[in-house]
Length: 438
Image (cartoon, rainbow, N blue to C red):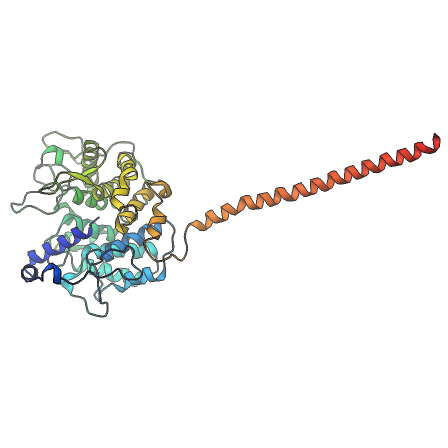
């Protein structure tokens, strides 16, 4: 998952890579005292913070998670998301003025991918879904990957999210191609294979370094893992394999036989799609075990810290890959520590993602470090209906039972009274009969 700061950084990076006016704009930007105020959260949007960088992202995650919780959102929440879509089918991170035409350069593959998945989860929005999928296909790079913004070099996060959306829309990623390279080819560009050190094989890099080398990145690995395993949001896979994920096998003999059964892979070759999910699953399992069942965020100039977002996506990827037992430790850790990430249930995107983890792991979201459904619904407009209706019906059962018991009690008392009356009548009758004889 991308935070608001991450989204802003991605947009800036894309602008710099494409040579747009982002850099001069920074140089000419007004002083902080004269900077325009951040837009307020619009009506219908989940979360109260500035939506500039993550409005569509957090709305999409919230609606997807609530759909999994059988909550029917308010019409205003759904119409806000559909109203953000551009005429060409893509979504930007946020449109303050939906009456104005979109700037194609600011449309965002990440926002588009999660918006498509949200509308599919909700149902009833096929036209918007079809346009969104077509936008993704039209903006695929020639190497099969996707960039955050169109025209920039691809990255693992964006490519993984696009693949998730294709799976959700039942569009085979192997058949979505540009210049002969399909979506799986694009994803493979970022996965570390046999040329990497043994303990990094299977991981994903965000993007290649300037020299072309790949370096493992926790968030990129977590998000790409779900795509490698054939997943989408929400994760509903119930497959389970007893064995641990199989590490990538290489000609140096440092790992087990690959999942594809095709023998060892030579150094420098891309990881085959058939082996991708198991390879990243094995890497994540090892990293979670080494990190106390969570992944670690390393930022230049800052001490290492728990990476909640990467850990959540890693858990989703492992569960989708059929390895819920390897995800269980991370799920437990998120249930215990997730309140820090969600800011006590006030961060809509984090709360929604945590709710989807609980759902995928088949845990009770009402006691997953708090009541996640209640926390998320409180961050947006009142829903039209919630899954609390069956609970309310169930809660009325004891009252009916009490009424039933009460009815039985009343008849029992009447019966006892009749018996007492009959008994009393017999006694009096006997006394009368005995009286004359005396």
